[in-house]
Length: 218
Image (tube, rainbow, N blue to C red; front, top):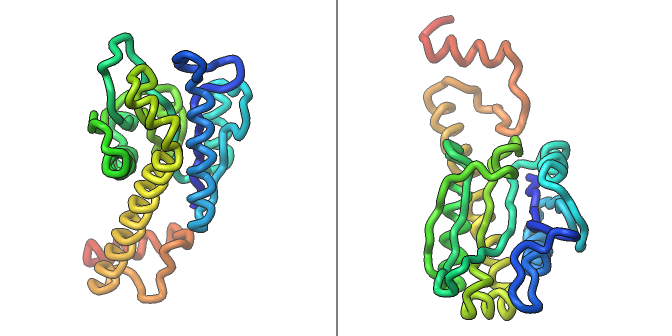
């Protein structure tokens, strides 16, 4: 399992700026902590950046795509002209069921851990969601333009990272459980053999045999 963690902005692109605080720095701080948590759980991580450097949107997608990452998680902070706007929201690419499910797990864990306003899971065609080939989400952790949210981002980056990591881990466990459960059901029906390895590649011959069993053929 390989997760691409993408700290939004960086280098010449500061992202949102509030006083002396820049979004790029907050994103990187949280993202590095996510990496450390996931690695401790034996989940491999590739970073689109691990320091303050300029990485354009296509480069971020290329890093994830070329590494054949299984999932892509982009970390951002929100900002708005009205300082009363606050809370957490997570985006997935339209029609991506796996992306939406991952987004929901992550959204739930952040809100539970930080008690931020739940702005929900939403669909958008953001560049890094559209041009990555794996299920991808973009997390808007909280609003830098809201004083209370900014304080959370500055004082509790570990909690944001833990929430995102927890959501990711729970999602991965749910996917693995469902795959195993589906395999066992097919084995009980005699559609696939008992020695079937869920992580192995399937040949066209094996695939044809499964289809014939489903259709009642020989």
